[in-house]
Length: 543
Ligand code: ADP
Image (tube, rainbow, N blue to C red; front, side, top):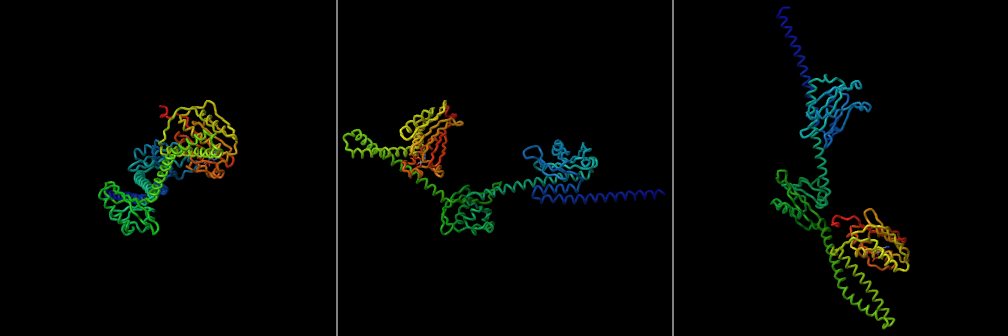
């Protein structure tokens, strides 16, 4: 072979080599292009599970692996948690140990890395481990770890490049998906909030079109959201409402931030209500106005409540004034009957009886007036509380002895623990409270029986309980007997006298002392009233 032939052969060989190289580059190019197409599919995914499956799917067409794990950064920590895995059978799972330092290094350096698996004797299908960091634009998203059946040095440069591209692209998609899901749940929360507000909410854009509204707005203004959104509010809302809104929009745009207005509005021929409408300007983050928000609430109910409250306080004031005015003539009557009763001998039997009845009735009237005046002072907070350290057992014992022993049909049983702590109380008020509770126990056991009065420590309280064997309280009445003037039928049917004010006074006094009251009762068997007074000193009391 001459030199020309040798030269030609050499060129031909190089040409063949170039052709192989070109085909390889062509194949790589095609591979890369289809890889890019597959990566683009990530952006259309709307949940994590699909994304994890797609991620491993794309990886499996790029590099051979036996096992894979996807880990996500645990919220608010530097650690990772496993969220998805593939090809990791139970028994082998134990053998796959993952060095957290390798993961941390890969995410800190944002670099795909491959490591030989030390324990290759155990798992031939896991000779090396590839860590693909997933780091988004704003934060570390996680990492994917692949166990490959080939040694680490066999990972070729081209695949390595593809994995690096993959790492960047998928991290971005994952971050976007996280953001999308977060925004979606926030939007849902916001929608829910708007829907659950008990007022009608409606938002107009600056082009007068309805941008948003809630179901209360639909109901109040009688339209269907589906047809109303993006329509001009003037075409959707009742004429009178849209006129009011037009005026409010003008004043809102003129710069007054929050505007309130009231209008009479007829929902239908039978239902009229007073609407309270507040409007405020909605701006974007640059402060450019985007629309006007209206919140419309039904003022009729609050007006009614206001009226009832006014009436109630007028009634209380009236009762207070009348009671006060009655006290002076009553004192005169009582002094008169006292004088007459002191001179009983000079009265005829008939007159004696009449004076006795007047005396009895005036004492009852006096008790009623005292209760009413006490009640109204307790209610308006004008009553003075003068506390001192007192031993409750003294108060209890004297009241119980006085009230129960005065009744011939009742027996008193006192159960007072020794060495009880003192309590910081207003003694006359506690006396008044005991008088009511023990007095009731006697009064509401008309057939007599035992009245047990006990004083015991109960956690950080002192419990005073009064038990009778009387008519009892029906379960349905237990919560009601604290209301002013409320009396049970059991009491009224048996013509037991009372005003229905005593327990309301008791409740107020207990509240003034930060205490509690409990009742246990059984019809026709008896009741137990327990008053719990706190023993612990508050810092204020100690000074
Ligand atoms: P009054 O005894 O003047 O009617 P209270 O406010 O003291 O008013 O009591 C309210 C109602 O609670 C009583 O009318 C009665 O029906 C019921 N009640 C209170 N204490 C007892 C009790 N120990 N046993 C049965 N019923 C009671």
